[in-house]
Length: 314
Image (cartoon, rainbow, N blue to C red; front, top):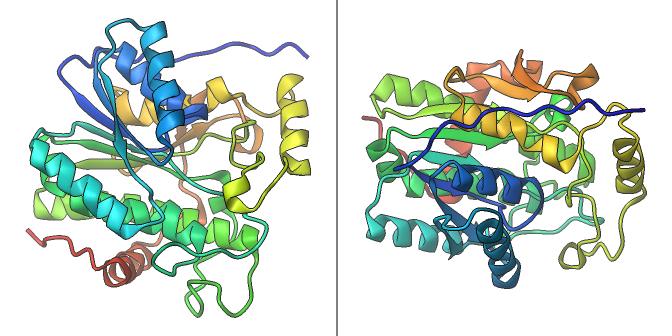
């Protein structure tokens, strides 16, 4: 099957400062590279300095003169998140674009963060929640657009309120879905609170569809020594142009959400193909799991209490 090519236009971002988590490889690297090529100063907070240095070198090779730099960040540690926030606030420069892209998916066994949270919930959602709270003054100063990367997995499942950290019984896929539902509800609630309190921030959501990214690849640090059968099937389908996207197309919804002149607040951007698995990016109807403002407020309150990150009310 022949794959039809498509792309989007990223506007001139000269004078803008962008922060992209999870930008050391895969679609995060692609997002950072496109922002830098459009003239933005791009901050890449990474956990692995060597991978980060390779990523920066690749961006500069493709776009000589690109203004990109690394910072240290491990989203599974609230101390690390706080240290990054401290460093960025000390620099004192407004942030205009924040793409919350980093994440982990389905470790073979239940694992926890440095702070004792289930790894996916703690990294995908709570770490980003604390990061946004830590740099909120800079986001306000830049009248930033915040784009939070969720997943097609948010279409299924729910918040496990009786056991948020999956301590009683563990289901890796359900825990992953919960982390992305919570993260999506947070992104939408961030936009509502910004409007209510005059923060000047706009917040929306994106998801990449399904593509052969590194999420399900071999990750020894997660206890996964080899690629999962699932990622091997994804690679095969993607290579044949069947239903799914590629690493190149997977970055487009987030780029549209974060930079598109017509992109709207409180909206989900994803591939518009069958099942939102692949295809050109477009605005999509929110999944049922993301539509309750009451549930979003509950996630927000729980996240403040768990991370000890409290947002202002004005």
